[in-house]
Length: 239
Image (tube, rainbow, N blue to C red; front, side):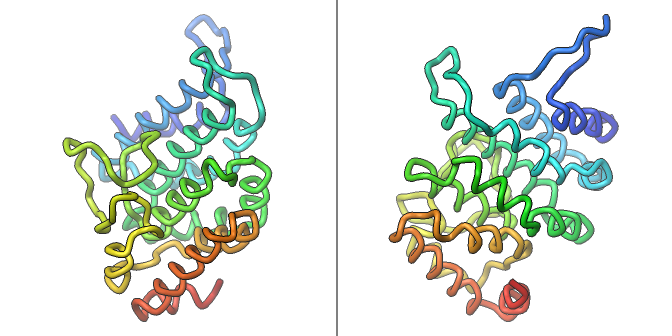
């Protein structure tokens, strides 16, 4: 039943509109979209066939169709800035995409076609999310996708989650909780594989939008990934 409902959730996310029994249509706000993304993530986690349904329902195209939502707008009722709201939505979206592709060879092909496209890079660059306030979060989420590190949707973008949250795969990190800022994480790069090199392509295309210090950290991290395993060298050669 979960797998059957998943297609409906994806269609709602694509359109941004939900229709009531009486036929009235309502536009979803960003909080509602985050709730649906969280539900989608849970379905992907408990149903083995859900990944297949996610791929067949073109769930990865959400990377393109949901970006119009990440545009300027008014503050919400809690006084959060539009950029903060959009970053939360982007975080939830990337965590769902990572869950949808993890350990699935067919879905990796579908994801690569979308995330490595110039269109996705342009949408990300135009969204304003790559800024001083959130540049590390953007890098973190794309690296999670590249390495297929599955974490629950949360506005806590770093990998330091509550102890009660099960984490299927994790890299040992320092106090920062960010992949590229951790010496302990870097020490284990030879054990981690780049499954979705397209996410690294996005980071390289957007490199000049990051602050100089972060540019160096990111390039150093990618270099260590490339030299960490022959699998990574082969995957990253094509970017």
